[in-house]
Image (cartoon, rainbow, N blue to C red; front, side, top):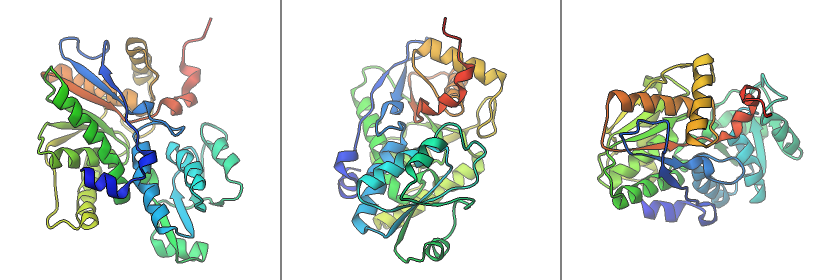
Length: 321
């Protein structure tokens, strides 16, 4: 892994996150470690910060006339990438769909920073390159796809696997299972690739938050094939040591219900850490129930998300007296 990280990442953007024992919420008879990618910096938090180390490095190396950033106005990824790309002297064009919450969450912050940037609303994510070239009247374009789910983000995301491998090697207690959630699936793909490079076959359970299990598997396989071309490897690496889990409740992307709201509050009370409601709360609950029904010697639960998005749900928090 290290040669890919050294070659394709900006070293000043590489960060490490803590890992610590969970002292509550998860089954007490099973040692559980929480990997705290929610504590990573650059103002947005979460494992997306790892992706930036190689995505931004790619943009800096090629210096396109425009870096097109796809995603919602409310996206943490858009909010994080906009100032970061600007700080490296890159011209950004935002391709965003119509927002149903233009005055909530990240949207006002993105709008405030859009001065001097090209903003194209009502644009569907995933458009082909010719579309953007015609729209911006330029041949020199690099597109950061929604959630940075693309092969250029994999080298930076491999650092998560590196850090978990260090934990596995140093732990004095058994760790025989890893849980990670998936929005786009990029971080999960990088984790699986990293474990494969190290010849570690520990089972990985992926909570599919933003899409159906079959769609996630297709995305993972596409990323594995893209990685083969990117690294010019002779054969496609297709890890098989994973299983996709469906959230236990509020299964539709972005949905919440009374059950997950209650669980979210219970998690924060038990773990003493802020959590995202629509991603992390569902992931932690799914991992907890899976551990209860299929116990193991020890597990790592990766918190890929940032809790900042939970500010949209601050009205659900207990009233401060």
